[in-house]
Image (cartoon, rainbow, N blue to C red; front, side, top):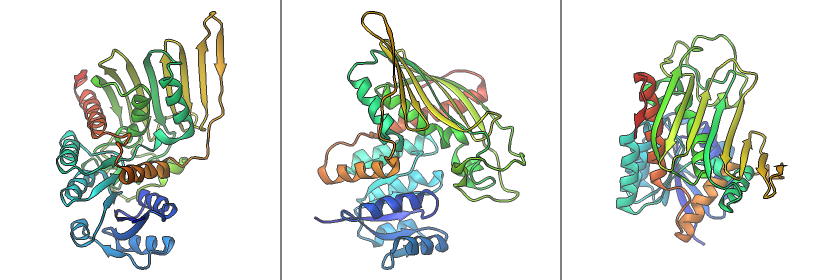
Length: 357
């Protein structure tokens, strides 16, 4: 079987995680090129993954134009996701991209339009869909055992966990925002996917920035992403809350923080249905609370697979779609709706009003 040839743009941080996934998929993927504006990151990646013969570039356009690639993997700061994805697809390459899809609606619409026009597969990381508890909840809901899912709550809140303080993560021009766009994509997408992908119609929200000058160190392993920069920029929020309404009448309450005075970091999705409610827990478990036909209440705590690596599973799904030509479970319109939600929450926070989508 012919191996897919990939060129990876952005080789530090999450780029390392993607390269680990490709190493495990070496029977059907060959990393033929690396690209990073910091040559040391490419050298480190080459050494770690035994990529002695790969070509190295500091310009993604040069890499795409010179290398015979089947697809391009993007793990750069947020502001580069859309430009690189569009350029790659226009040059006959499929694209797998880290989240968020783009920084703004114009960027994500350009990605969707280019994918449709060129016929190239575009997938943006949605790793939380592939964990064992996510798969269990999706099956439970699809079987009708929750009834109508009409409301929910989700969040990813940290006590202290600002990534790359002073660097691109905390610089709005490069990131597009703080924890809402960084963490929000994860849990909002998981919630909406579990709810059956209803279309968002209105949002409201608030954002805060109270810990830019905090002297406390990070207590979150996830804060290791990004590179700190002394006396750098911090012009994004560190805490966001919001509310989303959908076209089917359902609603979703959201909360995300890099820093807030809580007991400890946690991620969660809690959904309410007419027959049962489900809780997706940070430890990989699921809790289900329902009502039997005779009116008696029941609680379930099913065993789920806690060994799945969501990032690797997402990349594997992308490769499956390339191999078979079957439709992937991520649709570019889902990315458009996601960025519309995030930008509208920022707008609502600025204006103090609900924003219609």
